[in-house]
Length: 350
Ligand code: ASP
Image 1 (tube, rainbow, N blue to C red):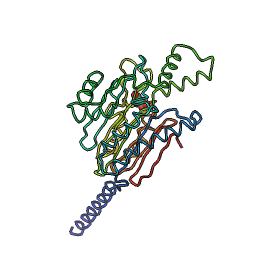
Image 2 (cartoon, helix red, strand yellow):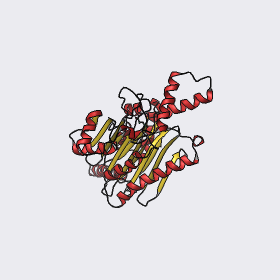
Image 3 (cartoon, rainbow, N blue to C red):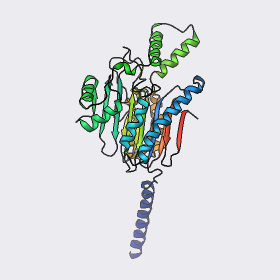
């Protein structure tokens, strides 16, 4: 009997040790970066053959300029919130991206801007939708988080709030760019007329329609205190109407951040990103299924979103400083920088 008890306790103890070993192995992934930053400038049918060398260089230079602003803030001990705001503002001010100046046009030939922000430490968040006269929608989204009792404000109310808080108000014409206006006209033409007799022209117009869904900007940062922040800013989709709102201002779809898991910013066909809760799903898979960032982003974009028929991508960064670019489109304007200052800037799939 004594012998049996001894064997039994030996078996139980060694089983216990095994369990501990395997869970310890899972719970102690290494920190790969003390701080890091990752950005996107939209995903879509971005093909090298349709790009001039000049245009490609302009996009790369702006992505580099933007990410370096955030990286410097983080390097000097600044917060991830500040890094995300300042980085996104560089892209909002550039006509190259569909956010702030350079935003796409609605069917009514206006610009309606959406943005959101989330703080991974507190899980506080702020968002704005359908804003027409606030220069920096990302700044406004952050203000909603810090200076109101709400998470999301829209339209006129959001503008009144912005004025009250002293944010820069601009004439709506500030957002006008000829390129985006022409895109809208082409899409409207395509809707009205049958161009199919001219295949080349039709293909050009169709590519335009496809890309009309894309171009958002986003940023995720991890600061030296281990705080993750994520933000997204967009003009939405060309030719949108009826006050359409995409995923960009929706927490859990376009933006999510949680210090226990990761931060995510999305870009793509918003309706699918809302239905898939893309940003939150990535965090949830890490939290509940102990997936790595790469496993979670791959599953959500390449498997779940793709099966549903959605197109686009995400940039994501986890609490250990791992970073991931994931998209199912031909390209995504993107960049990352780690704590050593290593810079990656890319446009196409490799
Ligand atoms: N996701 C944005 C929207 O649907 C568009 C984009 O990312 O380019 O409004």
